Image (cartoon, rainbow, N blue to C red; front, side, top):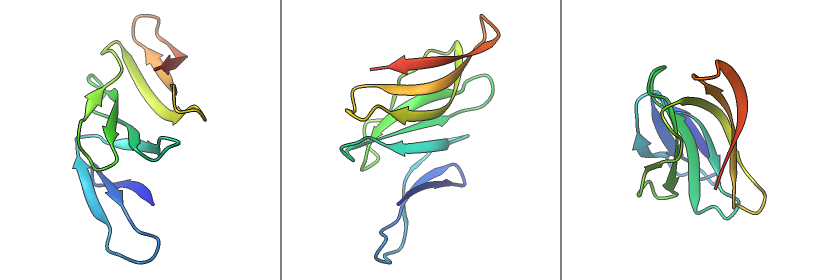
Length: 102
């Protein structure tokens, strides 16, 4: 099981092992597994610096995948794992859009 709490991504074994934190980042929210279970997508940051990030399932290799001009939320992987879609507020347009990244 994957969840967020206190600006951290937590993994918990459904069998009953203690949850473990794999990443702490300010403003962390909205996590989701890739279809193959090897990566995690999440949004993090404050209102001026919010971004969409991908990390490996072990918490390594954090990388930002959105520009600083958008405010992303509610990210989800495509079933084939090739794309990530999210709701993005575009500061230039002052409107919500669908962002799709590969």
